[in-house]
Image 1 (tube, chains in turn orange, yellow):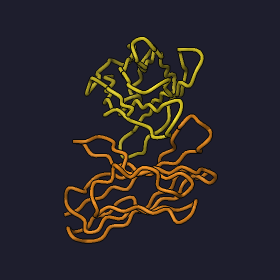
Image 2 (tube, rainbow over the protein chains, first blue to last red):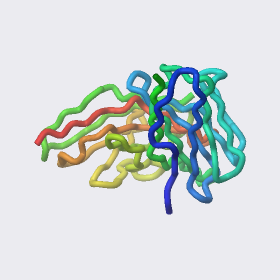
Image 3 (cartoon, one colour):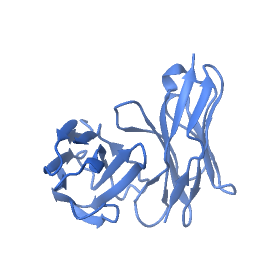
Image 4 (cartoon, chains in turn green, blue):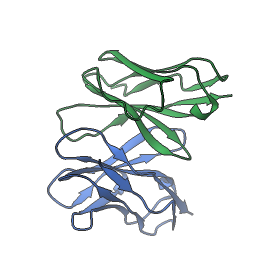
Amino acid sequence: DAGVIQSPRHEVTEMGQEVTLRCKPISGHNSLFWYRQTMMRGLELLIYFNNNVPIDDSGMPEDRFSAKMPNASFSTLKIQPSEPRDSAVYFCASSLLGQNTGELFFGEGSRLTVL
Amino acid sequence: AQSVAQPEDQVNVAEGNPLTVKCTYSVSGNPYLFWYVQYPNRGLQFLLKYITGDNLVKGSYGFEAEFNKSQTSFHLKKPSALVSDSALYFCAVRPYYGNNRLAFGKGNQVVVIP
């Protein structure tokens, strides 16, 4: 099993640019989570999907952030326009809804730096 | 909403000594509890979980955790720490019934001193 795959691993961009982060969950998993990790705020849940449907997006910081899951094998997190305070490591995780244990499998993360 | 408290920022321990990382939680109803470990520049890796049954749970790399319902705690332990155990450790909780949203603590940096 390839695990959760995220791309890019590193992204450096300038303020105002659009950033798109990508995630491929583990095959067969039907829940997908986007987290953001910073030194100041720790690990924050941004949004999660069950069966490709967004369930809770209350953690999305503001309208500049959007996430989609067009099918069971792909999700994107977009920031437009990006700002320096968006600099963080963004993690995608997946799990199997119905297994009822909630164990998450994390990708290696996308480190975003906004200059 | 569920939440986790990890009161210590950093835990320092000498190699070979017992290691304990503390966690308390708040959740409606019975909890599912988890520990994850994060090595530098890596994603979080699952260590162990408590679902039901025996309060002492054994996991990967010689770690174990004890569920204490009356104290709402789920402390992580290892009898003899290794230098390679130096990492960031996260406790997490979700309710037994209801949403599958996992709430994480802020994490504890563990430093094992040779």
